[in-house]
Length: 350
Ligand code: TXA
Ligand code: MG
Image (cartoon, rainbow, N blue to C red; front, side):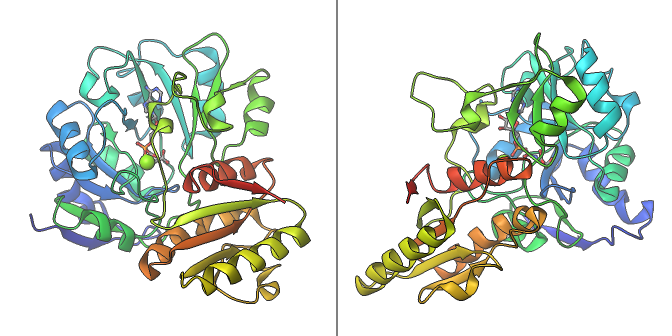
């Protein structure tokens, strides 16, 4: 398949520029779209055969449900059988934005989109291109991250091209995304709302709006084989660079010392070594290929660069990666969740 790539300036575009993309979505095709979190791979969420194409293009297991994206509140009630109080409150405060909520589904939403579940995950993106395209398509848009299953999520159109060129009808290139980690997912279908995936809408923000919020244990660490995470996607190896990655936790001074020592040994063994450091620590490393993930003074910069740094190490074909770690508060919870998974929970405490 020939994949058409179009450039759209998210600050200044017309409906006419999005007309072909909207047409493709309506007709059951696939379009990669920019959102404020990561690039998504969009298809008509109400068309089971369109959802099926998403799974094929990504190489994704079909029990892993998709998020249906809407453009405004009026589109919600067609898809969900109930809007619980918690969902209403969060929608009012954080939609459109980087928040996904799980609701009981209406019959119109096919099991092919929800991975066989009776619930459906819904998000209203704030990115103007994504939001307008959904409106013009006139259908809810199912969109997982637009990466090959298991690879780091795409934060630039180039990443989408790497993974999807030749497999989908169109890629909309609107440059880099803003946030860089996927949306926060909250299940509001039960008695007490539950955080299923941390993101830019933090646990602290959710608790401020809702009071009690539970947390899916899958977020905090590796699961034993008999425990099922509530968000099926959380069980898969994810965001993984090709190299073996080690996340190093502890006092900064000890972390730097440990990484320098391990990097030296690995280099002596003939391995290509990558190091994920910060603006604050970049001068402290003596060998290896350094990548600055952002500044400790600005967690947003770390989230923004995280997946791109992992992909750059893939491009450089490094054999092993050592990464500094971050506090698990606020946005740090989302950052550490992605880094822990990228490292396959290979964490060293020094
Ligand atoms: O920021 C984002 O959410 C991006 C952009 C494109 O919107 N999308 C995204 O989709 O990250 P994806 O498919 O990569 O991740 C969706 C996650 C998966 O872990 C999936 O298991 C979970 O949401 N999920 C979807 N529907 C669910 C449901 N009904 N119940 C529980 N978890 C669900
Ligand atoms: Mg994904």
